[in-house]
Length: 273
Image 1 (cartoon, rainbow, N blue to C red):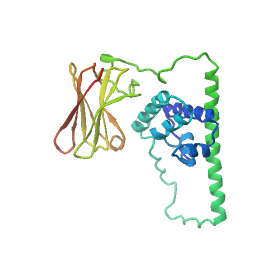
Image 2: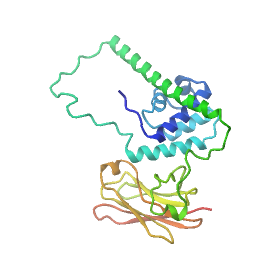
Image 3: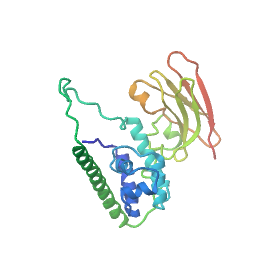
Image 4: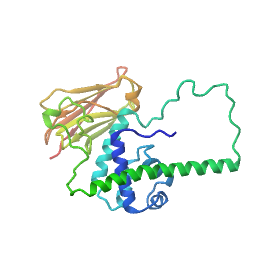
């Protein structure tokens, strides 16, 4: 059975996407005709098998004539959750699940291949239909309530000094953040300074890193915050520093100390008004 993204943030995103699909009245094939993404790709996205790219969410918003702010906030939360927890990596096969001495199955005939492909497509379509039916049901029950403005799926849990030293993911400060600067290190690692207006805080994140790399963020009036890539899990996803409190006009400094004694690399960004 195909694994599905289990994070609550991913479920919220798919619910929102399914509501838009229902509003358009389009099938998966219809979505493929109206967007740059194939029918099978939409099946995976709406079946919660893989996190859709940001551009796919924007494309569906455009087709549904929906302002993209709410869905992009949901996507940012899902992206943080999936990247941090490594949910997009396929599960490792269990030991002993297949015998090395087992003979390979005989090749499928053309008829068998067609039947299997048909069953796969039907199952994928059915899974999407069930997921979207549940999501649309939730959407209908919500729409029956008096309309209230929703700025984000969940508000931030801190602001300014109360965010200092805390996780941007845990405090829900990552949706949607602003980038204050992106730096490509000599090692190939990508280092970015991020800033949340709602939280009044900044942090540094790194990806394409190596075990032993250390990142740091600092801003006027407070201590620097650091994080270290400690294992393959960190190196294959995103790693974030704790946050520092910032205000408009502050210069935020991000640094990378590469493993193995490489030269320290730093860059800066300015918090806008």
